[in-house]
Length: 139
Image (cartoon, rainbow, N blue to C red):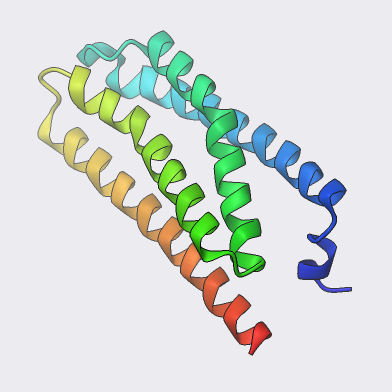
């Protein structure tokens, strides 16, 4: 049984969504700890940041999971819609940091921007890889 056929089951999709929500929450809590240590002294409220990331974690996780399921099912319009939601939710915490951080050292600011770019490239690469693999398998 391959992964695509396994994912056709609604039960399996819900299981993946739940696990993904848990992983996203753990990741976001870790990010909040890092934000506290790196940007807390420059005006970023780590508690507000934590509230932001935790409040968007579930919709973000669900939208990214549904985007993947839509790609695997060749439902491109749905994939685009869920992907658009995921992109917006993904960048909300970063925008919060950019709007509230004051007098951040240039090296820290540059490191933050480079980190955002690197994670974005990995995410885009992952989506493109899934699309290409799925198209190959359906050809």
